[in-house]
Image 1 (tube, rainbow, N blue to C red):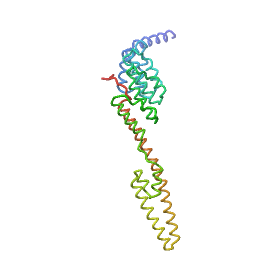
Image 2 (tube, rainbow, N blue to C red):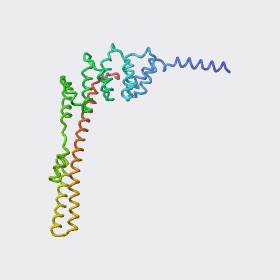
Image 3 (cartoon, rainbow, N blue to C red):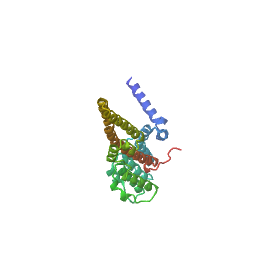
Image 4 (cartoon, rainbow, N blue to C red):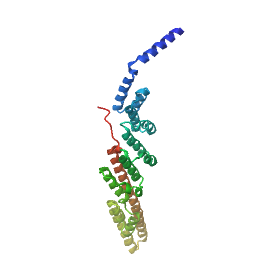
Length: 275
């Protein structure tokens, strides 16, 4: 019985070694298929199962790319850093690493990646500028925007928007509504709210005045209280409206910056691995 089990294990071992699905070239073909089907985690695992002798720069790049796409940045960096400077992928590897540092908001590591004589320098510089815009560090980047090119023109426009945002003053909004109820809301472009506040405050103020004039004190004081509530509430609401307006300005800026970076693929070149 013991010899039977030994023979069985030997047969299984020989079969597994001769199994065509376990041949490196077939593993690679299957991994390539998974990669092109955007099944990046399984593709990476299949590539990794290849022996070291089959791990070319292209396969290592694909493994790193797979992990980067699915957000496993630490694993991605480990493989990107294994691609030598002599590789045809090297310049783009620097961009890929820069993209990861940007997404992690790691400005220190991004700075260390930037070597002026390398082809990737300008693209990494764009990421650095974008990161500072993201963090609203406008004082640090004016001297970085002197380079030519369409991307730098766009980044200069973003810089102008960030440096001089189209904010509404909370103080002005409050003062305007204190002088003319509703005008602070109109100033913050909440036109319907501003007109409504003006009308309601005016109506209840008139009712309060008219009732007090005719000595209907209870109704006079009641309408006075309601008018005062609308008046002071509108002042507070105008200040809050200015804060909301400014938050929308910031959100719109960040969304536009993000859309620009996604459109430009964070300045990373994409290779056509799938035909």
